Length: 492
Image (cartoon, rainbow, N blue to C red; front, side):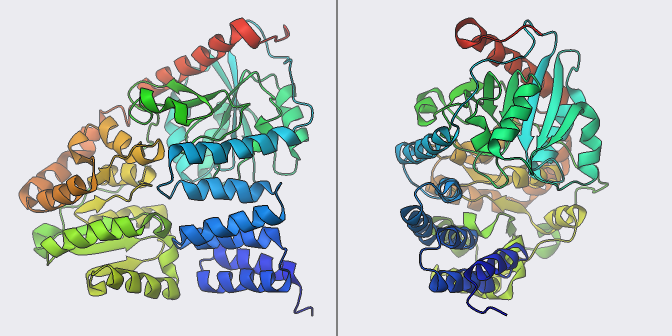
């Protein structure tokens, strides 16, 4: 009807991206920009699609172009920050970019709250959780066990869901919340007013700069104490967020200055994995029947940068019979698979040694794929967290590389919390050497695989009761730390 309708081409690009047709999505975004060269939102969306196929520099260039056109485009700045986590930019640079976002949202929040109507002293702390991922998503999988073990004589939970997606996990966790509020149809001011009226003591952001976040709401300061936790692995840059909940394994003391938030340490681990409610036994080591090692990586393609491929090439060169298995949503697009084959060739890896599969239809089918690999090779500087936990549950170790940023140490923190510190490498040479060494001892791999699920089941990574006590203590500690100086709450 209207072939030159730029907005329709932009929206078509987003729909195509969501169903994994990346080449077509890129073409639609570029068509929108050709029709409307000052279309900032299309540049930002093009950047997201480029990030999803691993073209990080091009993605950043498009976000910056969007911000040149429209300097107050929050989506472009938050997308830029998320993409920076995939790169090797300095912590100082990333912090400054995050602070830019913080200044943007503070400027929008014209009249933030300075007094609150939460009960003082509280018998139970009212805790708000703001998230768009309260369903079968990594966030949902990590909080389910925690919610089942909290002491509700000390804590009262309020959910603030930022979208409409719901499923069986949503229904399982809902009873743990006193109230379940929907924010998706509210603007930031109205959402902040709703939260403020609930008398929340501590408001938790469970998104950071990931999709469906409502970080601008936090700039209104609807709760006297605000913290970020779980879904994001860098600073938010939002001045009004007081704390970042993490662990010393993730943010060493000397790196606290890389964050706009004050670090609040949880002991042992900053996350607790909820085991899948599925009857999936640990499979025997594939190499016992195959006669060769199959490495696996189930990370998104945008995490597999050139440095990762270079390291894998060196490992496969030393182990000429080893194979590599990649599984992720993007590989459901044949055009993307062909692009990745070309990338492997460029790095000296024979594409015939690399099997690529798209997303599995169900979580059970996805977890069953771990039976096909002997050990996982993590990505860097953006390692896995959920995939690493799932691999451990399925009896598969992950070799991870500990970097020097909050993000880059996530995989290491998981392996340490699970009692598998020897699977952490500390530089690329160590990563390559350990991969070759572990792959050269098939009997040891088989033995450790057989006992891995039982071993991690008693570790802090899966001890939900212990984690819940630590989590409660952290919430009360943050609240009490804010009370003496700048809190003027109203008795209720």
